[in-house]
Image 1: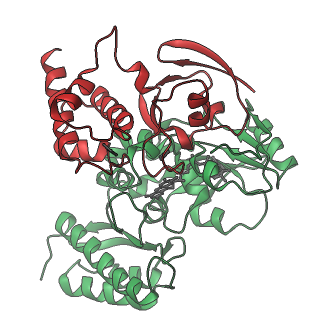
Image 2 (image 1 turned 120 degrees about the vertical axis):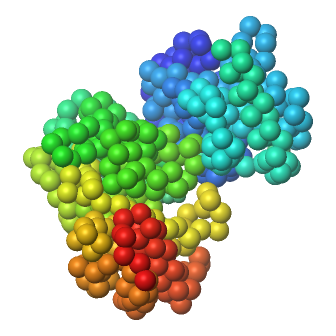
Length: 155
Length: 284
Ligand SMILES: Cc1cc2nc3c(=O)[nH]c(=O)nc-3n(C[C@H](O)[C@H](O)[C@H](O)COP(=O)(O)OP(=O)(O)OC[C@H]3O[C@@H](n4cnc5c(N)ncnc54)[C@H](O)[C@@H]3O)c2cc1C
Ligand code: FES
Ligand code: FES
């Protein structure tokens, strides 16, 4: 089957099998920042934005992306500048092995685009589907608070 | 992982077309909504998916005093809807916030949650106590009780168009308890209670318990103990004790029947105490 979608701002037409997941297809097409962990919706390593909302690419059939917009971690930085969430993750030391980081960052980007001033509870809720085996989540939460403050200041 | 057995995905433009596709291949086809359940649990005989995304059944709207939620609305769209936020004090919104994480809720649809009806579903007990109805299509449109669709044995089961919250439930209040190992895990048991309180007495009381480990059911014997009574400490204790006595529980790998019986009493008590704090002036 042929699908037409926009990935990181560029229109794409891909040939996919009807049962392919979005995760299978994105990785096959070279978007290796979309990680595969569990494949069952439990870890969040495969998080991408579908029409601006964070989703598990492993649970979405590629055909469901027909006509829609996908953003992967590769498309978050703009014009050679890191996104404020990425900068804040670096500054706060929120990355250890980094396997969960693309998913965490995309969940945070999705949250801040809908809620510019989230409480700590709302941040925890937003990243509740993104598991991290290395950190204790404290630095990621601090990073998202820092990014939110910076994004509000620059409005 | 790719679902290799899927050979085709069709995208009908009308209800009639969608139903015809499903009816002509009952064993080999399924309706495709968000697809998060089908990706994980597609039955081995299924090779055709019928994508419902072009049928225009995704809006949340008011119809008279009812709130009507399109089956293709995602759980996020439902919980963010101001109409749902204002219905019964935002009870359904608060329950949906406890379903999985935003990553799943941004894709999973209300129709998928209702039809899949996992034994541990949090959505089903909430809809049961709100007395939700379903507008369905099986060659013709009809409105049926939520429990009726689940009890139907014919194959294929109808296409769900909308989930309807009856205006009569709008002025009540609901409370929900989910017992799970972590916030993200599915529940070992869940419990929803709903009441309309007038002059300190329960005019309406509904109680449902799920994950027993069967899918949620109403407990009419418990409801009878509450109707016409105040939500007092002694009345709540009686309801909790009755619930523990009548609930149909079993062992499974998550919990023993005995533990579930205890959780039922705790869940019903906590929900009713919560409702008493919100709606009733009468306390002992
Ligand atoms: C990782 C994970 C965690 C979860 N956690 C929770 C939780 O904490 N609490 C909870 O309550 N639930 C939970 N769920 C269940 C989740 O809510 C349901 O799986 C989801 O709502 C299904 O919706 P869908 O749109 O993806 O359905 P689909 O996968 O598209 O469909 C599911 C089934 O319903 C049928 N169907 C779908 N729409 C219709 C329709 N309109 N008419 C007729 N048939 C239809 C399909 O044919 C299929 O058989 C979880 C699921 C996953 C994968
Ligand atoms: S790989 Fe998708 S949630 Fe783990
Ligand atoms: S940094 Fe290693 S899993 Fe999160």
